[in-house]
Image 1 (cartoon, rainbow, N blue to C red):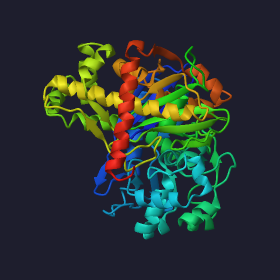
Image 2 (spheres, one colour; image 1 turned 90 degrees about the horizontal axis):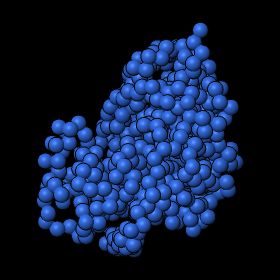
Image 3 (tube, helix red, strand yellow; image 1 turned 45 degrees about the vertical axis):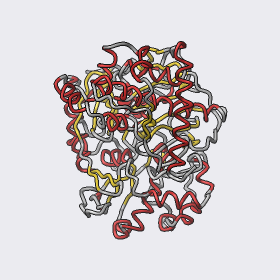
Image 4 (spheres, helix red, strand yellow; image 1 turned 60 degrees about the vertical axis):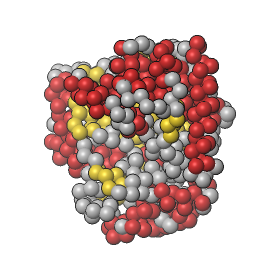
Length: 538
């Protein structure tokens, strides 16, 4: 008889689906990934396919389990996380088209799609009370502006939709048949008031989505449960066949991907900070900052406060940058030396950004950053400012650029871009501190934050201790923790986080560079102000 219990964490990011197999101590035994398709159209339109994503989830899960050597009978629970993208399904779960191409397979409006910017602006002008729980202004990245866009631009799709689901909730429905929504998804992205356990009917009628209120919200979720809740009767026969697992395996209500990174880090064992003083910084295609408080903190321009959206029983403030890893990739490819660097990166089996981080470290640690950057300044807001300005119209800015076309010049531009992201995080920490949200430690996770050089720069630019998980995949670990709770292996999330996650390396801010970074932070804010003035928004 097999007594060991193992748990699967499944993460669906912007570009890939990944699965990891973990033991009860949080050790990852194996992982696998599959790319997922991304479709772009003019007008800030970005779409995906739920069928394509499910196939990638199934293939990566089967491979991860095979590589782990763990028999399926010992897989005791599964947890999911995903981007906060909108999935539109017709009767029977068939995909419905959501965009100008009218291709039904393209039935997901991706989180980074900004087609609903005008709808978001119109919603914000209503001044509805619900907006107090999204930092005062709703983002086009959220779901109600996207739903309003659909109602106005694709009325047939809107009318024929059987369910509108966050991607995480789609994955748990596909696995179990349960239409229960995670409190994380609907609270953070759909305006559900978790602290009152209700939708605000007045809000939906005021913004033009009264049809959803008329039907008592049946298409966006009438059952809302805590993350980690075991759903339905576990894996259905069809889902079990697709995933290569046993029917009935417990499946947990999931999380948004960044929040899974928070679960995998903020409650970890380790001396640096505590749940109430650690800010999770999930650094991937975008960057999310998540801070936990005992009482609600209303911070203008920072999403939330959200009740029980990440750590059960606590409030959450969520900020970050709409483009982080993606912003750095975009920035460095503008440089004349990027083609040569990309060829070298490809030869070494790295992404361009990974190669630049390695190259920067090879010629000196973060202490050489001032010399490498020189007078370059970058505000990497190529996809708007998520926090603290809630300004989707913000644009990237570069100042102090000369005619250096060398690889060294490219490395300097890369470092300036990373520092710009750090100054954005510093800005968020500052506005939260002014409202009583105190941070002493940043706990970093996500693929773009794995470089020791990047972690040190984050410490230097923010002036805070940066800690990293001992797990190579803290986001996957966060989802596996959900699976362990759903399986009943741990009585609650807090005990599961403590048992399965641990902090390892810490990075102290370099005191010798504190003044240099303080001056550059002032320049960063000055450039942001100049950018707003140029756009006529000052």
